[in-house]
Length: 344
Image 1 (cartoon, helix red, strand yellow):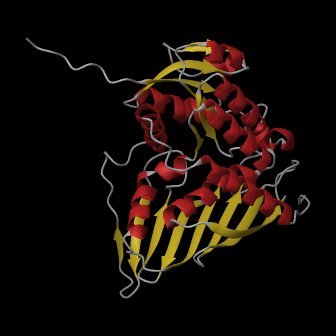
Image 2 (cartoon, helix red, strand yellow):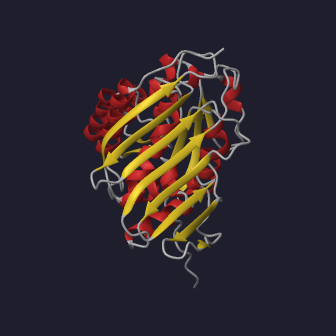
Image 3 (cartoon, one colour):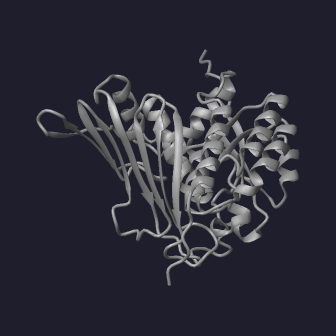
């Protein structure tokens, strides 16, 4: 007699905040992952709530309704930054695991509140740093661990876009109250986190210069951050809302004594891009091949990884206290920065 294997358990997910990142990347990932079920969507904007294609998902306009839904095991928080802390506390109190968009919080104090709430409730928490999960970045991390690049002396990231005030209706990313800042708080967390992950190192110091150079809004439209890691490696991040999208604007470079690694168009929400190594002795550049099985959506890798830890009762690979430290580091760099008036 044929005995079918029992269907593997899948974690029930809700997405709170149905903006473009959730709609175009998070929701498809939850629908396509092997161990997840998308069971609910939530947004206070009824129009935004109806945009995602998710016929089987319940739709709510209040977080309280999500938290009362017994099918929801975990919540992906994709709301404006100033809501992250209170929403995480509410989810934790309801026994829901939390995967929260970066930045984790606007302040380190809010981050500590989030961690404490999840620890009290015994639920998992992680910050949604999808760049960790890009196939090229995972491969590069392995190459660094194996010593292929030698001693890393400098690490550089240019991650920028063009974001005018009318980029989207109700553009909260340029509202200092909702976002907590501009280009720096939105884009720099990815690079701060990713370089620590790639290098297996920790930022020891960080300073910043910010600008309001092109766009006439109340937050910075560009920033340069520089600092040093505990090992002595120097790091440089250039982030901007004032960089035309037609320019090369998504590059990652690690300079080592044996080789230089250059990743192009890997920073961002999509798979693809390229990764090359340049030999320090010969100058020869070789391309690192990634198989289609590896080069999937970084959001897909991310939700599968988080869900696996929840289902198997294992801790998340990066403790949330680390994310709080990065929020504090960014806050210190923000206060060290000098803002310039808009250019007209």
